[in-house]
Length: 509
Image (cartoon, rainbow, N blue to C red; front, side, top):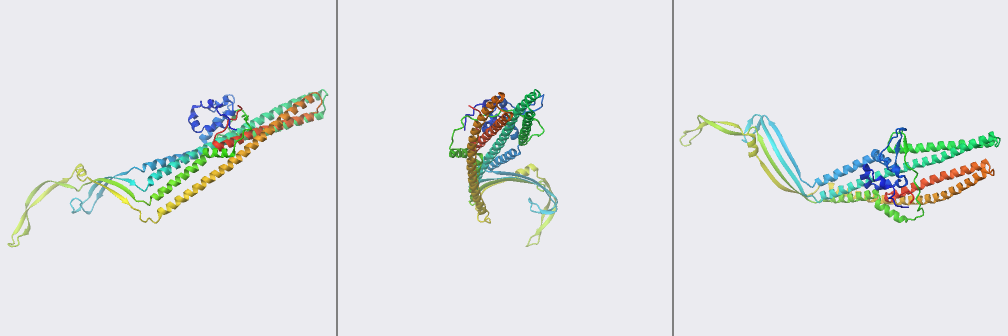
């Protein structure tokens, strides 16, 4: 089943626009590239012929368009980017918090001047400037565990994005395969239409010459019209397959397209056997959905550790720098003595004690001086010990345990589903291979029989009915062979996608 995939890939790697993506999604182009002609694989764009204005679609181009237009891919990419932001923020949370504040205040009415401690009745303007910072030194391992939690969430979203892309590529490849099958069947039926038309013309000539009867003519006409009807059905089937591919690529259904690839060849080593256990083990190691489920389980385990860390004390250091300015902060610039005024009496003599009456002149202290003189700073450490928080931490721990259990079940379910899918795909693959081999021998026998009947018919030893019967039997055998051929390729694609996200080369060695 697994064949060397190097053939036909060298041309694809010349596509510079998608080379980086080929490194990450190399399996992508193993779907049919080996089975298609090298010329069609070298297409780098959607060329439009000037004569027919038809867009030629290669599988490579279809995959490019689908990955660019698909909404599920875009949503998954957004989720992955969001997980990157969460991881980055969890790392930044290890650093300190630093905040700066500045304020402008006006106070009017009666108040206490903070500089003179006296009541004043005026409007005071003031400014306040402050820078403070805190740094968590220990928080029970919550920050470190949160980093690991978001790291595994990020890995899980990467696998989700890869899974979505791979699923889109598989769906596009299968739809492309349906188009090839429809076109091949259309060609086969077209050959029968041409053959029956030639036979009808020959019978008409024989009838004109009197060498055939009218019944033979109507028999030839019926065969021809039946083949025309079959061609119409084949054409409709091909158009339906192309329309399905257009919908998957999200392009306008009115755009005329041409499937630019040949029919993939069936591998020659058809009887190679593989252990089902080995295929399942291979799937376990390669499937993105299994990896994503495992990563989410790892993330939930670190979430539990982070929740338990909230039960431990936390240690934080912090500091503060601050200064203020007030429009009511004054400095004395001069004074004058205006006589005297009594300030008391001598107890023994009742003599009046007088003091000079002084008037002061002041001005508001300059802004820069106040900022400098009022500058203050502080530094300290705080330890916080959780005592009782309405059992919120215990509830978070219980929720984290449930999350682990939920993710374990999800992982086990993914593994079980994978085993079921691989087993079913393997059985379908082996059955389709056996069916193809049987129909291949059947078609060979019917082809030989048709050749023998043609010789007998030309020698007048077989009737028109025998000839038509042999032709119908041969074309039916060929149509069944085409269907079984594509069914076998389809089953092989699905099996390879399930076990290792890598599709075998479908060309003959």
